[in-house]
Amino acid sequence: MTSANPPMPKVLFICSAILCGAALVAHAQQTAPSTANDFALRLSGNVTAQGIPEVYMWGAGMPRDGVEGAGFPILKNAQHSAIFQEAVAAGGYNHHSQLACYKGVFYAAWSNHPKGEDAAGQRILFATSSDGVTWRPWTEAFPPPDKVGAWDDGFGYYSVAGPWRIYENEIYLTARLYKFVGWEDASGKDLVYKRDSVHYFKRFESVGLLARKMTGGTLGPVFALSTRMNRISDLAYPFLPYGDPAWQAAANAIGQTFEIQREPIPTAVDGARMVEPTVYQTSANIKIAIVRDDKFSHRKYVSFSKDDGRTWSTALPTNIPDSPSLDISLKAPGGAILLIGNHCASRFDDGAKRRHYGRDTLDVAISTDGYLFAKTFAIRTGAHQWRVPREEVPGRGGGPQYPSALIEKDRLYVMYSLGKEDIWCTSIPLADILPAPSNPSIQPTSLP
Image 1 (cartoon, rainbow, N blue to C red):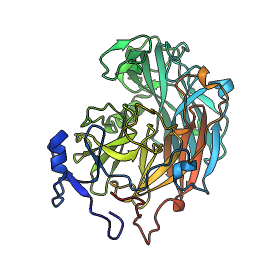
Image 2 (image 1 turned 90 degrees about the vertical axis):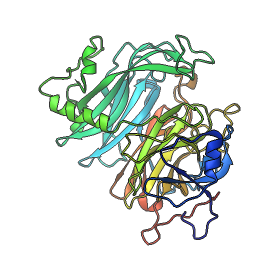
Image 3 (image 1 turned 60 degrees about the vertical axis):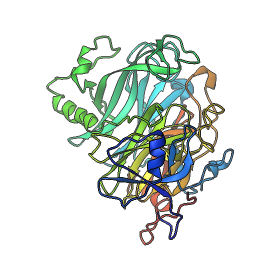
Image 4 (image 1 turned 120 degrees about the horizontal axis):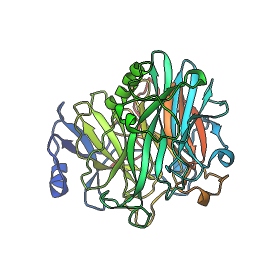
């Protein structure tokens, strides 16, 4: 805890045992000295709708519905810069932000489609900037991999913007290639070809990974990162197969990073479907995964690994609010953990009444130890004004969302989609969000 004399919360220690139900509740009442092999967690004293004790990781106060910035302090020195606002001419769905900075050049990439989210023919666009503020006109990085289809029945190949990678002083953009095959239920066992009230999760097959050199905005050839792509003969554009001697070394080096950084999908203690984890590491070399669920609980889950991500503990529900949406995390100078996402839900476990809290506001939460996010600031807030009518491009909604972020010199840069239509970048002085070196602790707004 970072306050001088906070109330002493209950502490939950998770070792190798898997705890659930009554056993978890009973175990949570115990306190014991922490050891290097244990994870010491605070409990809020509340339980979820399923009766599971809630892990206390959010000390910034609950968001306030209908209040600008969800009631969090708004960063007055934040500088908002448009990267892409050409939805009418170039396609109304724009999402999956990927931001990088290399040799003084900022690179932004994102997925683009004219008819809806993750349908056949989805392509990847990119833009560059010398300062992260003024952006050059966008260019196509990866063309449509298939015939452009509609959102609900656009079966076929689509691409999603992947992370940027550096190899031998060159920057490469990666692309994840998928195939949309139908709609499944929450269990993932039942597949249909027409979306309905039960089958509303898109099922896709992961096809493979592609990359191309992008240094200075100059496009190199598209090449495969593994032998999986060599099976594909009907892609709508040519690519060099895995094994091409000119690109083999780059393919191996870049492809290996996807193996090293494979994200965990832990099992939830209450059976919730886990998606979109973000992982960071504490000063004690414990890896922590903050994970979204797909049952609209409006809270994040947490899982831990003490063996560098090889195994993960059962995911437990936390009191971190969730719109729901994607969170990302990064470590700031000095070791603070920044958790960036849409922490704007004002109530937990109310999915039957309200599925989404509009993904407004996009905020950054700060933790000095990785276990308690004690302060939160609003990065961007406000409703999006559609250029292409929302009903014409299914799968869109919400405000600023799905960020990608980096720290360059003394500023935080956050790229995001606005309503899944526009692409923006906001830069923030680190001094506005990080504790002063002379006073490294952050006082939580709320305590259990």
